[in-house]
Image (cartoon, rainbow, N blue to C red; front, side, top):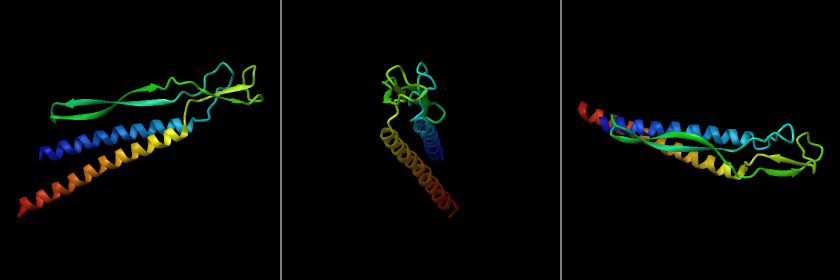
Amino acid sequence: MSDFHSSLKVAATGLHAQTARMRIIAENLANADSAGKTPEEDPYRRRVPTFQAELDRDLGATKVAIGRVAYDMSDFSTRYEPGHPAADEQGYVRYPNVNSLVESMDMRQAQRSYEANLNVVSVTRQMLGRTLDILRN
């Protein structure tokens, strides 16, 4: 029974980590066009989740945990918009370093990882149910 518990616990940590990852990706996508209000103000900077492995001594298994959220230090994009309040002297506005295509692909990967962990939970529950049925007979 402890193997079932370990499987469920490890899958649950995977679900939690992927949920946090999807939340960060959604924030990136929501701010993809968020320029600063003035030329001096930096626009939104893309955030990148990190993961870390943690040994759970009680379970005897390694779990995944969301680590620190790092900032993508790549360059901001610029657009020529001389009428924008955040335009510099040359008329360029700095926009976030968020690429919607990259974020969409990251979201798809996070969703698939989430679904894989959800399948582990489902299969473990089925196996536990069958084990209980066998023990009753």
